[in-house]
Length: 288
Ligand code: G1P
Image 1 (cartoon, rainbow, N blue to C red):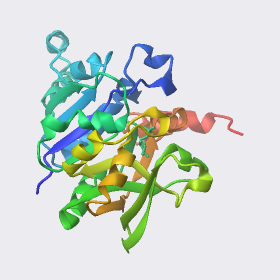
Image 2 (image 1 turned 120 degrees about the horizontal axis):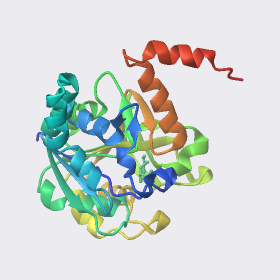
Image 3 (image 1 turned 30 degrees about the vertical axis):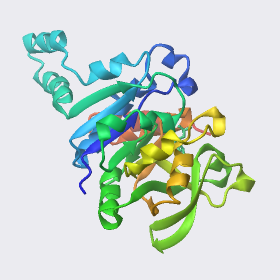
């Protein structure tokens, strides 16, 4: 079955980026000059998906506005013959069909995914977390869709992380079925280092089958008092095969300050209009 829909949970409070996120959604913080959520939406489009549901919450209105027309701004750019900017602004509102729904209470990622039930219906769908930007030759989600087409079952995007960081992630263990795919046997959300079976972490990309909704509706609160998607997936693994795929690409945790800074530097250095002046600035820094 073709994956036609993607869900982007964006209801989190962004406490790691206060005070900036007091009034600005964390998804609107820019890497160079593009909001982080636009990178995610562009990955969705490049992976051939037609409809996106963004799960928002209070104070997230600017996300919707970003993907809508901005008539006054467009008129102004037109009047001043700023054609390139005009095209850029217009193209964002034409990108893809964006739908939104509000998660009324921040009860966790598992609960947020449940809010997508009526949008998704009875078909497999993609979930992309906004804190994880992946820079890859082939878009990360496209790689995952190809794996889904092989197994027709739930696929989780993973990569190894430093052992000191396993307590920040959902961790999987399983049997290797080939160089980059595991048949998942166990999942645990944010384990302490001594409880983690591996250092293979879930990194914000999922292809889920619709059975996840029934499972999540019955999933109890887990780590942090929240309904965890990882716990739902563990339950689902008792009913159907789940595969973890080690995707190719450099993943940035733009929800952390250091990941955000790394992405900013790397993405700026890739920009034709910035790379020369920015790298000459960096080379002048007296880094110890
Ligand atoms: C969420 C998931 C976790 C996953 C992580 C990836 O955690 O619950 O399993 O490893 O995203 O970024 P969060 O970072 O939202 O606490």
